[in-house]
Amino acid sequence: MGHRVPLFNKSAPVSRGMCAAGRRLTLKFLLCINSGAVVLFLVMIYIFFPTWAELSPLMDMFEGRLEVETGRRAGFTGLLGKKPVTALVSGVGQVNTAQAATAVLQGGTAELVVMGGCAGAYAGSGLRVGDVAVATEEVYADLGVSTPDGWLTLEDIGLPLTGSDRPGVSRPDPGRRFNRFPLRVESYEAALKAACKGGIYFGPFLTVSTVSGTRERGDTLYKRFGALCENMEGAAAAQVSLLYDVPFIEVRGISNLVEDRDMGRWDVAAGAANCARAIEGFVAALGQAI
Image (tube, rainbow, N blue to C red; front, top):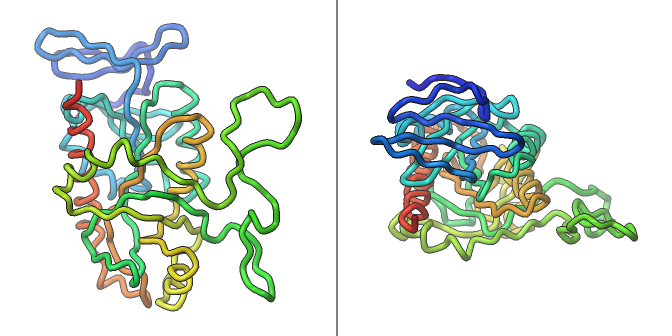
């Protein structure tokens, strides 16, 4: 077990083989001391998991693991491969995820945000329990309007989630986005495939407020969007990362199929463990470039 400190607390203890967080003025960093060598990291990878059950398989993969808390979210920091990484439990749902991502990204130390955890795969996707999938796009699947003639997207009703049409806006504008947030996975595709030895699936993910507990609902969403799986957080993390212009990757382990709800057929442990192994391998592949 590591020691628990607030992330970016200047008084955090530093010892051989351990990592501590420090702050000087507004500059946040991770200081690591290993074998007498001091390494100062000005940026790091942040990984979010909705629950402790989904984060826990990654814990023992850290080198010099230190318990941390940032943005009122608890987790661990240290080296994963050769990369400085902080993994936090962001909480279930879109609001928790947006708050956690904003708290982290406002600090300006993130080079990459990764969303991990489990997901439910649609029957038409061909995925099975235990498979690992990577989002090429995140979609708010139930944010819109239900009408007698069918469901309307935010674009249908002219309400963008990002971008501004107000004249004189000087801040960087991420562009108009409605329900869909395309993800820039091309730069990381080779590392992701290497992490799973080719056994990984790429495609759209859906973010929902109410998970699908019937095969009928799952089939409806699959036909509407052609997505691989659904979760309750990813689009919020993608949106906040876009606003801060930080690359975002989402990796999920499949814990169940979207069918008439029967938790006896679920395997959350396998989904979480396979997701953690994929993320560890992915980060390690990135670290080989150091």
